[in-house]
Length: 222
Image (cartoon, rainbow, N blue to C red; front, top):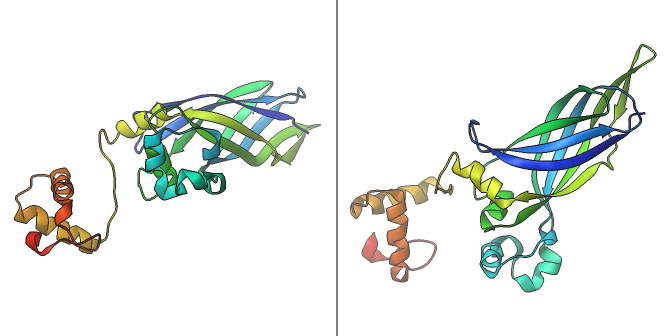
């Protein structure tokens, strides 16, 4: 049976991908001396927020996800980031693997909100491996499962995630909303001759004290 060991080597942002993407750099070693013909590998990636400290500003941004810091002992639970499948070519001894990780920049997604809330430091990740190992012994193909116990705890530099986002959306963020809300924003933008959506939202924030609440705007601005 193949004996696999997984090691974390680092990460980099992909600047020329079609969507925001990271590449996680791994090393896979087979320690029994057996040749591995291929691995159909799956990597589940989780964020483990309890494994790092947060500044006051970061804690304020994370309030929507985890509540007040006084409750974090109960609420700071793992977040699912993504699951990535990849085919690993055959090797003897060890091989280095670039694991491509595309991701969304939708701020409604918990993992994205977590990443975007960090100023610096590392994102604590847990990589959980599964899949199928293909080997040949005595002229026969052997199929084995990657044990569920194979995992790596590692730290992804927050700046690498931000570099991947900025390569596609520099100094920008995505926020989804209903069509009705967008229609109202468009009417407000047109009525006040505001040149951009950024200017529109800044105008609303500047005059926030004139609004009835989150359900709508005051009569003066309709």
